[in-house]
Figure (cartoon, rainbow, N blue to C red):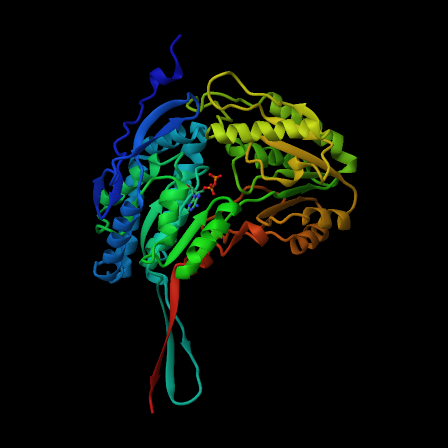
Length: 490
Ligand code: ADP
C-alpha cells in the first residue's frame, strides 16, 4: 500500500551549519549532534554544535553589526520593509517550513500549516509595522529646559528558545528585537534546530545585513550557557523551564544582563455548571491535548463543578476515543509523538504516578506502537490537589480533572501553585467571570475560550511562570532602553 509519504514532497535539509556573520560554518571543533524525527526515531540530519568559541564569534558579529553596521542606523521604515520581505519569503516557502517543523518536532502537519507558520508570519509582520513607530516622549520638567526621551535598541540580544513551537518562538523573539534595531544570536533547542536554520537562510536572501541575525544550534549547558555568560550580550530572552531560568539568572548575574523569561505553567481551566458545555468541553480538550500537551499554557488542571463533573468527564473521554494519534505527516492526524525520548519517558512516568496515587485513569495510559514517541491521550478523573499530576508540569497528553463546589474555594485552589501563566473560566454569569479574572494570579485569563493568542496581546507569567512580557507593545519595550535627554534652554 502506498504510504502517505509517497505523495508528499519531502523538503531538502539545506542547512546544518552555524550561521555567523552572514556565513555558514561548521563548529570550531567540528562537532555535530543528530536531530531526530520523533515519529520514526530516525536521524534527520547531523547539525553543527556551537562551542563557546563559536558563540564568541557570533556575539562579535552581532556586536560589530550593532556598533558599526547599517542596521540600527538605517531608516526605521527600511528595517520594517526588510522584515516584510522576510515574511514574503516565508509565505513562498511556507510548505517547506511546515514540513521541516513537523519532521523535526513531530507536530501534526495540519497544525504546522495552519498555526505555526502563519502565526510566525503574522507576528513578524505585526512587529515589522512597529519599526517606524517606536518613539519617546517630551516631558515637562522644572526650569527652562527641554526634556525628551529616546527609545534606543537594547543592543546585542541572546535568544534561547524551546522545542515546542520552534518557529513561532523564533518569531516572538526576532519580531520585537529586529523592529527595535537590535542584533541577535539565536540558540534554537537541540531537538529542533531545522526551521531556525532555514529562517537564517531566508533572512540572508531577504537582504538582512551580515551579523544582524546569527543562529548557533547546540545544547543548553554548553552553547546556551556560553551565550548567557558572554559579556558582549546585553539581554537574554529565554523561553523554557523555570529550573533553567534559575541557572540563567545566576549565570547572567556577573554581567547584569537584561532578562525576559517565559516559563512553564500548571494552568487552571475552570468549568462552572452554568457553562455552555458544548463550547467548554471541546475547548478544554484542545486546551490540553493541542500540540501533544506540549504547551506552557496547557490547561492541565481542569476544575469542573460538581453538578456537571461526570458529564464533562464522559464527554472528554469520547473526544479521546476518536482522537487521531499517528503519523504527523498525515493531514488527518490530530496528535503526533512527543518530541523526544526524554519527554516520552517523563510523560509515562507521570502516568504511572497518577495511577499509583489513586487517580482514575478513564482513557489512555499507554504507549502507542513500538516506534516513535507516541502516547495515548490520557484522561485522569478524581484527581486531588495533592497528587503529583495536579502539581507538576507534565508537558504531555495527560489531563487531570478535579472537582470543586463553590466560587471562593475555586479561586483559592486555582491559585495554589507557584506557576501563574494562564487560566480560564467557563460560565454564563458575567459577575463570576470577572470576579475570577481579577482574582486569578496569571498573566493571561481566558473567559469562555482557551488558547487564544494575538501578536498585539501581551503574554507572560506571574510568579514562577516568567519575568516580563512578550508580544504587543510591552514585548517591544523589553528590547529598548529609554534614554532621557535634557537640554538647557536658559
Ligand atoms: P525543555 O525541558 O523544554 O527542553 P529547557 O529549559 O531545558 O526546557 O530548554 C529550553 C532551552 O534552553 C533550550 O534551547 C535549551 O538548550 C536551553 N538551555 C538548557 N539549559 C541551559 C543552560 N544551562 N543555559 C542556557 N540555555 C539552556
